[in-house]
Length: 256
Length: 274
Image (cartoon, rainbow over all chains, first blue to last red; front, side):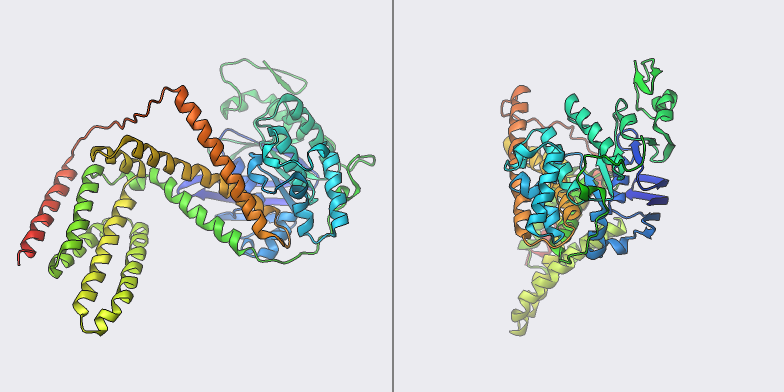
């Protein structure tokens, strides 16, 4: 479904992705892990067609995504319908006057009639448990509620892949738990899940495969999440766990 | 985690199927252009910290003072020879910069010179061709001089240098904060435009509502940031005084720069004596 081959990308003179090779199949749940500034967010932008590689090949559903194709509005619209992106900061994703319009934004653009739009919006509101906020202004909701609305906006497009940038950031433990359970359910429904995260406690629940980036913007490991979490030395080396603490591993959870 | 579709999922039916979407075509030129221009502004400010700027070592207060003086001399001078000498001097300075910067500065300078010449065309047709050429040359030199300063000086250094010219603290503080927030709010706006682009998968019949939504969110965000900063400054004991620290050290490059500029001042008086 997603094939990234020998991809390099840099911002002006700063390297962000260095010879990246990844293949993600339909229905997989993949976590992108790594320290700050290792290139995770850049890779997510690349997957979503916000940027194109400086060199190398990015293919989605066997079709190469090039800079030229990303200039074509028709092509990008179809790509964006297939890949949904939940931003790290939900505020940036919400711009309508109420939650209902926010979720209806995508379906309306897809040319659905208003009855179908309403059904789809209501389904999303119910699924995410935010029916009570349907007439509220998104900006005045709490962090967790905003994240749910942002997720609903993406779900309403019914994408094949959902990409989440640090989805657990700024959420209280209860909302984190809710989100984990939701993502598991979403993946079991056959959707592909790509999540960038630092959260070592929850990553094994939302992904079966983990791709680890290091500070040189290359892939340090691409393995099952459980195996990666067992490799404490590697996690220490890439600055994902505190090097001064002795960790013991128990049932795939990292415990101090 | 199992990667298969569960039969008894509580997901709505449409979410379990692949979307059979027929594209609703639309024009999104405005969003794309806004993204591009915002990217340019933000990257321009971010490159202020790059090595390209750090290698220009002339003391910033000196550079500002002499550029200001140069602009005054250029505007009051009636000597065409002086204006030409200044142009040659500026082009020489320009030639020592990187190709990318030269192109950027010349694009603006030549563009402005062209527009000035167009405005001066009636004077040329009415027989006063000297004024037309003189003012066009002056415009070119003025824009080039300002371009050289802006491309070789960090904005934060310019605001610090203002302190040496006895510009009020509050004014410098406001300038500093403005530069910082252009980047922060610019990044935020850029992400909002990306989100709008990513969610615009078809025909948006109400584009202006989406854009006004972004503007409204930006307004609220900037208000919140201003309030947060006010609270943070109070907590840090801000009393209204803003100190800019920095030693006024001169290097050999500065002395050469001073000598060149003294030469320019002497030339101004020499060619303007008649």
